[in-house]
Image 1: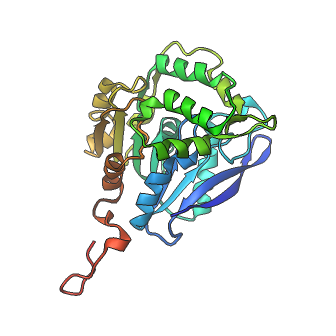
Image 2: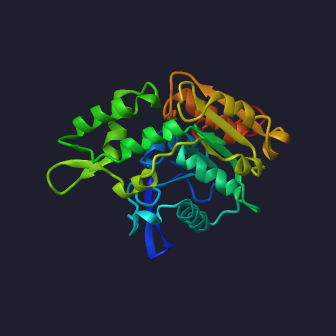
Length: 307
């Protein structure tokens, strides 16, 4: 399966900017799932998950956040704000013309999903937080900021892939094909015969001042009411096991018995959601009884269609 590559204009502080997204499955699907990537990544990280979910009848949308992937860069570093991201995602959901969406968010994508799910009247029906939660480690954010502030350049795709294998090792054990997929969608020619990462260097300005205290988001978490699946990489330095445990007992969703947590072995920050076992955890939560591949459906002896 291959996605359709589309875009939508999003109004920001200095006019419209193009928000790119990959679309899988039928626009007529009864279930729409939005998958949002981490701070320096892009929507093509979700190709394996999106293809699996689309095979089971879902429509899957994987946007490139502003300044990443195929989306336009914003005119000022100061414009890469939480408000800009939630505004862009609200516009995207309006474009999709659906009443509700399920949300899969990795790291920053999880933060955006939590912010939107906490709003009154939110269109988010179910929320998957991939290695993100109500308390975020300052040390991990400093590590991410230090990395983002460097101007990485590569002489070849192989060199870029080798770098990603090292820096993204916490994603978990990936196949050679998966590492090559990540590399192919992570870099672009810089016009001087080398490759650079496919994001605006200005996104690093968010980390210009070292973060010395953990980011506490309990007020936000307390307002989330929809069913939530929390995924934590076993070795994550961003989301602690203690925070996950507290999230399963605190807040509106937890009080209603709507929070489930799963720890992913062999991963840090953040599980790639590319292998079969991780995909199944997400699929079972989002689709449940609808998780049978369309191609695998057979008429039952009574003539009914199995699900």
